[in-house]
Length: 444
Image (cartoon, rainbow, N blue to C red; front, side):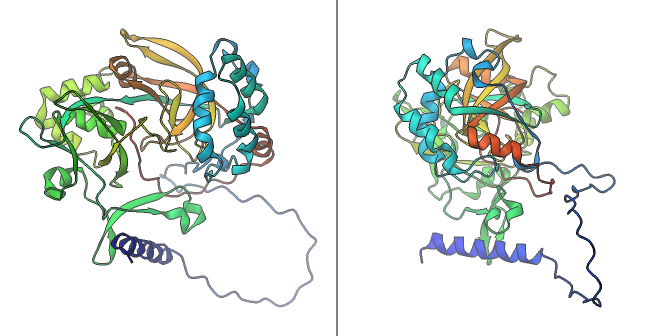
């Protein structure tokens, strides 16, 4: 058995033990004396989980626990006739290989639902007119809940860096440590589907992995895990939030890095903390505003940054990128990150929202566009919560750093899936732990 398999086996066995310990021992039933069978009565629907006094109401864990409603025909979506659906067709086509095999934890689709649409996508010519016809004939629309949710943005940043340490380039980007273990709790209990934890094995027990402060203090030092060194600690902090980026090396060449795991600790948004502490005012908690404040207040910035105990690991990428959670290259202004418990990854969706004018952040520009869910994020949780990918460069940075808007999302799903979702009543909401983060949202 390899070392990695050994540690993974330990982690899984530990997780099973923990889960088993949490399962109450059933009492032995008492057999009553025989009585005449009562007349059959309808089986009542399971009662929803009621919170105890003072506790928050349980949140839905998937789209299966929320009401669903039929949206308008694709051709009648607001703004549809003015939009260009060709970029979404090309992005959707990239997703099909994974989409037809992927387990949908939202409960909205089955792998076979996508076969006809993917087959048609492969033969549809790359023109706007044919793309429009494709989506109008292959899909029906569905809204989960009321369709509304927070929209934020992310982009592919570019940092000055080097493959080797120097006084100028002294902030490490680490690759995934071999002892980091990811555990899918849904493999052990259906009610935990979509929930993950991460840690390391210590004395035959799975324990939390080192947090941001411990890693910055040297927990991974001198192990040869550095994939690159960058110049600015605050830009490195936001690289962790974006999940991927470009490193401009001293000779002018570009090295691309992408997400390769996370330490399992909960993400805490720095922008929200600065607002709560009164250190920034509303409208200032953009990525650019946070970095400007951090450079002016390095000691306090270090303290607040460590409140975000989440830490991301990277790998060098070659070829097209950056890559999303589906393993395909993201398309600027078309790919979005979503919570796969509510939106199946690979799903086209119609978004009505707004984004900041990069020349004037006080002005919001409307957007009505077809996009494709191809990524996930640690802070991207809940129905209709989206993080829009804007590409690379200064414009992308300005928009992504300032985007915070409540948009309306309408899913485009294969027609059989829509009919099945509408015919199936929502399941009662059950409580479960929050999913471990993957890529984090920007300064939320």
